[in-house]
Image (cartoon, rainbow, N blue to C red; front, side):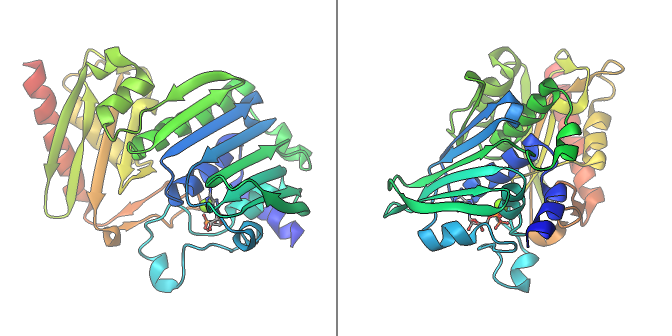
Length: 321
Ligand code: ADP
Ligand code: MG
């Protein structure tokens, strides 16, 4: 019902960037190759995500806004080996509860247009049959003023959106991403499945030229990525991206392993730029710890941390000495 949607929205929809995350993850789950994100007023006025993925037919287009209407988990077994990004089936219901949504979607056959304000369907109609989905979220939190008051400055909220698109671009180098804010292009990646090229698009060519490649594996984990030379550091940790099975995660332990591996080179209070991709059997990871799916619990974590420390230390040492 509407109230529980509004309550649940508090969990899923914390700020504009959380909506961008859900919409882009849906686009990725739909197999999109090109994803464009437009925000106005840092997403508070408008968030628009256009993808070229599988789209939805008319029935799915309306069902998608029902709570737990996920098409991605068919049984309990699936829940423990999640490979798609979304799986709880509550994002769209939650987003629609606290904004005005206009969605045009098509599987390539007929198209469908859906408009929902504060969780109430306004209109369901035919639309052009361009394959993919165009999802617009306007006037975020217009009906939950308390939440609107919680927003930080526009600058901060935009920063979160940019950060998020960057991480999604890193986790999906085979997809091209574009982020435009108030008409200004902010990020644009090539989608040519080349992480170094991604680093160049996101952090600049100068930085890409100062990155050291590394790669290694043990019985349980495979790691690869790029780390910046000690001469290129940052004053905060935001430039460290960790991906497990192509999902962006936050992990204090992994971060610490990376810093340990470089501690003899890093000036105090400085942090490297890192993109670290970890691949492992999904059975070894548990991403169900928090609804944002950003925290992760790892089996055999010690062996992963050791692998990271050894590999990065060696790669940097070779380039520095
Ligand atoms: P979840 O992603 O957890 O399944 P959501 O509420 O995010 O739940 O989305 C509900 C359903 O709507 C998805 O399972 C999917 O079938 C459909 N859907 C949402 N966004 C898209 C999209 N961009 N392209 C195709 N299908 C989509
Ligand atoms: Mg989803």
